[in-house]
Length: 322
Image 1 (spheres, helix red, strand yellow):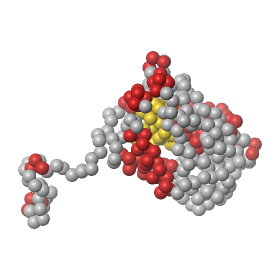
Image 2 (cartoon, one colour):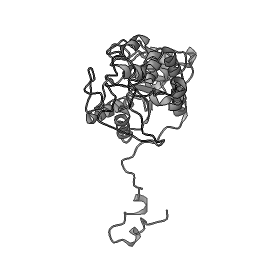
Image 3 (tube, one colour):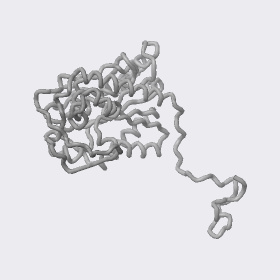
Image 4 (cartoon, one colour):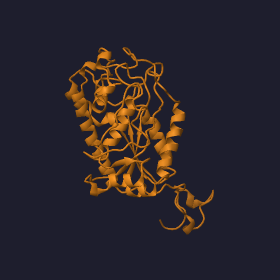
């Protein structure tokens, strides 16, 4: 393990969900996408080993999942042998670039009220999710991986993962990077790809195409007809709107007729390339300083801290020149 950590530039943790996405998509949709793009992080054209069986039956719950092969050159398994992990990350193998170690995915997540009643959704409480993720993240950092890339496939994870990252970063020296694959292709680009009809959304054409880009056999395009989603607010400013149940809604919505395997390959290529750009810039950046439990200046060298009634305390001075 020590040799694997020493040879790696970063670790990778996919986070997904087991959640209803409609009868056309598997319950493991978010896992397929998180694990697939996690493997893409390492560089074009190389192998990607699954850690501890990631990419297996759990990822394809409700469907089938083929392991994401390698547009990730230097992504090796955290559960594999040290020699295998080193060789897949070694520049002598012909796969240059940052070297990553892929940890088993976090499969279960807090799911929104809009999908919890639908068949197959397995949801955990948000407060449980934050604590669980904090333990997983801290465990990976403690194992010798101060740089951790978290690749997200489930939108609701953005808040719970972020909260867990903030907690760990105050306890350990760590650089924690969270990337949501869904945001790596812009709304303008999905409009260019799919046309003016709404393609983004839960179980919609964009997400369906993403799964088609990794595991075409897991998708049943003939299982549904289009269910046009509720229009967004007619403003250009960012916002977050959470409602009990949008209408129309069947635990999913979208123009599935716009999805295709060709579009999925394009989404995979575009999002994968951007993820690798982010990783390369992140690994090249200076590491952070250790956290501190005492953010206040050390006044020991200047004498005791001022007490109540000390006139030097009025403007924050503690004695001596600063």
